[in-house]
Image (tube, rainbow, N blue to C red; front, top):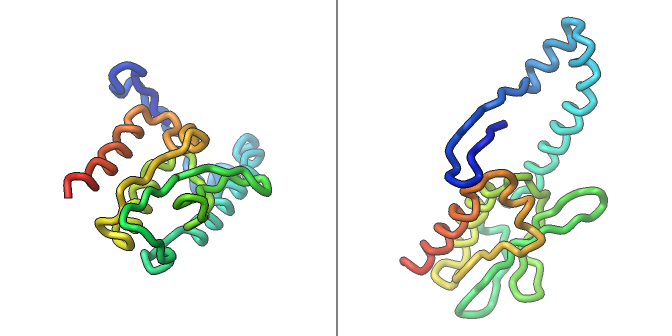
Length: 156
């Protein structure tokens, strides 16, 4: 976990939390707090595995879209007790996968695949208001990362 200045984004503090492996090792060694944390560790690991299984991995997985100018909305939905990233063009769902908190890095990966698939027709990948908290998280520079990606489309 990192703590940054809300005005300049300067790193103020880094708190190193135990890794999954460290928690499991401590639990195996008899640490009561680590043992109590194991169900949470297992749940996080299981969700991460499910999320990775459902990720967009190839531009070929994306559907054909009509139009000379494509604007893709990056939205967030809560369904079945999960947070989902939902990509839409107009009213059509283009892709759905489990969302990551502070998912701006995932945004960059998906952005690359969208650009690979749709080329110069891709005009923008725009986060919806509903997606912003989950997409940006606590990373103050995340909106600028996404703005730079979208600006790169106009520079081509």
